[in-house]
Every structure is written in structure tokens, then in C-alpha cells.
Length: 618
Image 1: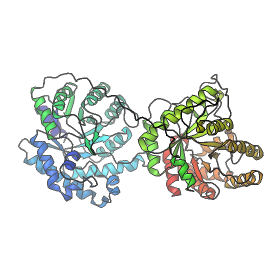
Image 2: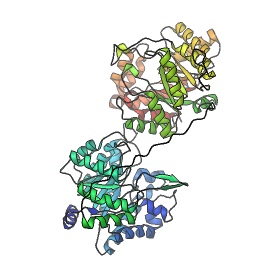
Image 3: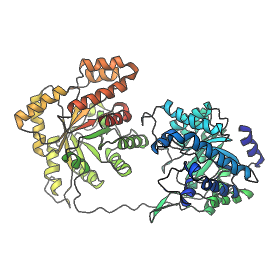
Image 4: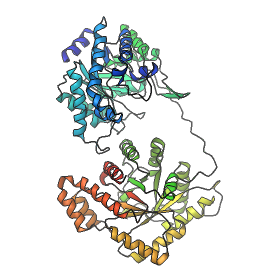
């Protein structure tokens, strides 16, 4: 296989080999239904798939990819097609091989392998070894049917790409291309730069490193150039989308035409690509234009990109409806929120992957902390906005009073409302003395109960603290903090009563490890103050290991973990995280009759453990 590829590259006179373009775009344009599994068309409509291959070969493609992009166990299982995995791959290779052999110029057949469609741990719940098994199964079947090379493409997680590369090499492949897709900011979805990605793939032994999908040719050439600078001895590929997709009249359209791709073909060649082709939105006409451009091969520099200014939606002055979170609590639904920490830098890719997983697992709301432990992190306002926009799940913004004077507090409230953030969790906040900048201002003008009163009694009525009009009432849904197992329950009850009287709408508690303690506190509050009307979401922190449990028990004020729970974690050994999830689910089931929801706080960014807790409670 290696010799075939290298011989074909040598015979091509120093020009890149021309690969085909989009498969899915053409299948859908020619009659496949959006709800159909496109890989299954190898069995249901083989002539349709064959015609796509024929059209690309007639356009000059020297490499065609099998219609097996999503033919892996994870994706097929979602469609109920896992039993047809081998049959789909066998048919896909057979169709491509037959068309390649019929073509007068001949062509290499590449086995196409796309992402698994699941997120790998720690940002998902699939272990690397399970991912490798799935990739290995797909690669083995492709190689068994006689593909000339394997192209692993459109992956947005470098670790998943590395797992696929290892598995494919172990399956016996001698030539493997690995191609990644990048977001508009030039990073993978999990925040890896082209330089980092190329370096890791080259060190892992990828025979061909590439960029595909992504925004379009202009971005692809920038990424290709950066990749080549990191691994100058490697071979590279570029197969971009036909521009950024646009929805017009209910149809997804791609703006970049064949002529535009033709001009970039020479730029890709000049930048050192050994393989060029197209991805989503490209057609045989795009490939033909690239082929014609390569005939003369007079390298030109890539043209400048066109910046398009985004036009934001103008907000209505009418007060919005209650938040979805408020509606869920009012309906009596057992509501689950999960806390996430903003990133330490400006890249949100890993956090967004975790938020996506939590939304898919069924979280009702995502809590975004504000500089937890007084450590410098990205503003939670930005994180809340990104999560709500991308995943359609509401957030709860943690709003500490410490370190803010009254002027800034009110400005921040207006900013949050303008960004569409309606759920607030008002807390004092961690003292800066324990954080990154101990000499930062640590004073405050208002305590949590006072801020709750300001929000509910002024801002939500359309006035600021001085009674001046702010244009329209805000519609904040405000929460407060509670320690159900406080060392001084009488003092805690008095503090909670002040917050409730100020207008607190809901309550989030510190982690609970003793349901009996929580029951005792709620009974005591009921006896002293009457029925607690604000819904309570009990804090749940899945223990990660012996050291984690010991630290919480011995060094965190107000945190006490029963000896029997610490003993269970110790006995679990390396499987402590799984035992921590089981304990968390047991605690939640014991608390379910006492509280109205759960507030899950996964340690060390292990959002996959939080997702397991959510699913365990269903």
C-alpha cells in the first residue's frame, strides 16, 4: 500500500494527488433523505453511491474514498444498524473498487473513517481503549476488503485522532492519513492548535497529516502552513469545505464555487500539500477545476479572506418569560444542575465539549462558577453566553459580592441581563487571600442577602439602588447558598431566613454526605420559621479517590465525610471514581424526598462522572 501511494505521487510529477470531494452532499442532493443513514446506502442504493464515485473519477480524481465515513459501531448503533457493520463496509469497498478499476486512469481507493460520534474521556464517557477497539474493528474490515490506504478524517479531538491512528496501525495498515477539522478561531474543538496537532500526529507516525472540513480554502491554507512549520518532514493534505455553510430558504448552501477552489489548488500545491481535494459542499465540478489548475501548476499566493460583520439580534424591551429553570422547579420536576469552572485561559473548547456532553446526558441547567478558590479564570459571563447559545441549555451565573463595590455590582447585573443570563446564584465568594492575587481588593459594599434584596426589590421592578429608572424591569431568578450540615445550625437558619425574606427563589447547598443531617436541618428550619418555600437543590460532589476524600474531610471548612464513605472509596482502589459515582447516586436517592433537585459539583473537570450521575437518576 505504501509503495502504491508513493509511486503514484512520484509519477504525478511533483504535483499533489487529486482526491475526490463531498460524498454526503451529493447523496443528499441526488435523492437520499436527511433521516437516512448514508453509509447504509451501500446496501440500499449502491448505484447511487457508484454514480458519485464515477462522477469524481471523470472529474480527474486520483483517490476516491469509500462511503464508510460513519460506518463504526457507535454511529451505527444509534441507527439500529450495528449488526450490518461488516456488510456495509464490504459493500462500500466493493463499489469504490469496481469504479476505480473501470476508470481508464485508475485510482487509489481510500478507506474513509470519520469520528466515532462520541466524546472520549475525560470530556466524554468513552474510554480510549474502547475507542481504539471501535476504530480497530472498522479499519480491519476496510483492510480485509482491500483498500489501498486509510484516511481518518474530520476529527476535532487530537486524542481521538491518536486513538484511531494507533488502532489502524495495529490492524495492519501501512499507509494512514489523519485529517483534523478546526473551528473558526483556528483551533480544534478541544483547543489544540494546528502546530500542536501536527507535532503530535507526526510523532505518532501518521503518514499523511491534513486539514479538512473547517471553514474553507482560505482557512485551510493557513492551517496547512502552520502544520508544515511544526513537522516539515511530514506529508500533508488539504480538503476544505466549500466555504462556511449558510442556511437559505431551509437549505444548507456553500458559497465557494469551483473557480475559487481552482485558484486555491495551486496555493495548496505551493504550500506543500501532497493530496488536495474537497469536503462538505464540494462537487465533481470543484474537483475538475482543481485538476485543471494543477495542469500548469504555477503557484500563486492565497488571496485575502473577506471579513463578514455579524449582525446581532435586537432585543425586545418587553420583560421575558420565566426562565426554563424556574418553570422546571415550579412544575415539581426533580431538577439537576452541574457546576463547571471557566477556563484559566481564553480557549473554551474543552469546557464546551464538557457542556455539550452534560446537555446530551440530560442536565437541566449548568452552573458557571466565578473565580472559584479566588483563582484567576475567564469571566463567567462569557462562558454562560457561549453555553446558552451553542447548546440551548440555560445556565446559572455565580455572582459573588466580594471584591465588587455597589457601582460595579449594578453594572454587572445589567451586563448579565443584556447577555440573556437570567438565573443568578448570589454568594459571598472566596477570599482573595487564598487565591492567585492575595493583595487584590477584597472589600464589598453589599452582603448576599442585601444583593438578593437589591435584585428582587429594585432591578426586577425596573429601578437601580438609588431608585432611578433602568429602562425596563429585569427578570432575574435568584438563588442563595446553604450548608445543610453546618456546625452551627441555628446561625445557619437565621442566615437562610434573611435570604428568603430578601426574595431568594431557590437554594443551592454545599456538598451533602449525610442525608440524615440534611433532614434534621430542614426539620429544624420548619420548626423555627415554617415551611421552606424556596426549592432546595442538594449539593452532590462525587468523590474521586482517597486523597480527594481526605482533603475535603480534613482541610475544607464545614465539610465532613462519614468514615464509612471514606472507607468505601479506599476499598475501591483504582476504581474509586466509579465508586464515587455510585455513592453520589445513593445519596441523591436518599435525599430525593427531602429536596427538589441536585447541584452536582464534579471535581477535576470530570464532567463525564456528572453525566453518569444524571443518567443514574433517570
